[in-house]
Amino acid sequence: MTNIAIIGGTGLNSLKGLTITHRQMVNTPYGQPSSPLVFGEICGCSVVFLARHGSGHTIPPHQVNYRANLWALKEVEASNVIAVAAVGGIREDTQPGRIVIPDQIIDYTWSRESTYFEGHQDVRHIDFTYPYCESLREQLIAGARQAQLDPVTEGVYAATQGPRLETAAEIRRLANDGGAIVGMTGMPEAALARELELCYACCAVVSNKAAGIDGAIITMQEIEQNLKSGMDSVRALLEYALPRL
Ligand code: HPA
Image (cartoon, rainbow, N blue to C red; front, top):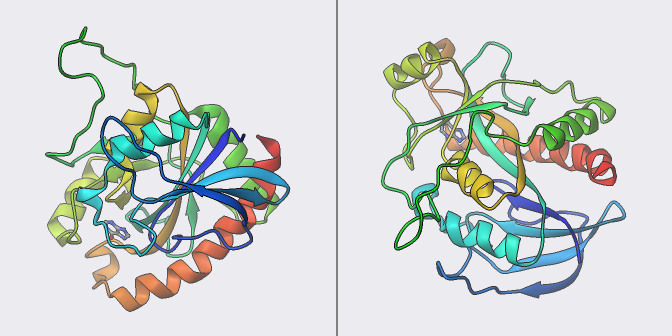
């Protein structure tokens, strides 16, 4: 049994260094999660790993079954959920390659199944003032610092619908709103985790300058290149952060 879950995003469909003990497909009232849960050990810690976009990276951000994913992790008694995500950098200090541990979210997504509270039950409104679990954020920051990664320790994650990238004008708007980074999977994942009372934090890897920043035209080649080294940074961070949990 493990209490640590890692949701891998683009560039992290599998966890290098994970000694797999078993895989488990979990059925939930919301359908099946994106991939089987992979149980194993990494850096001396038991973890459960879930590939957000499916094992073969076939599920686009707007079609991820976020409800099933979080429900499945809760079902196997995970309590800490580390969400790894590729993002575009909007703010000056979020250059490609940088690790960002955001502390706020603005949700620009639409038409996603974004709550467990529906149907014939009492309406509930979760507190979401601080959308990420502060204690987990602190451990991720500490782990990143130990790994000499100089993480950006705060910032607003602007969650967009995708799957297309943004226009330059959209990014200017997000910047005006205070967005530091932009990604497509941060919501409703974070809100669903809170509804299930999971301790959830995001470890974002900047894979590109967001559209129009410093004249940026984004190429998939650039994203893939930056993600390769970025995910090595994530692994280094996990090596120090996991034993702290
Ligand atoms: N925008 C949205 N999502 C992303 C980006 C981006 O520039 N890069 C990686 N995920």
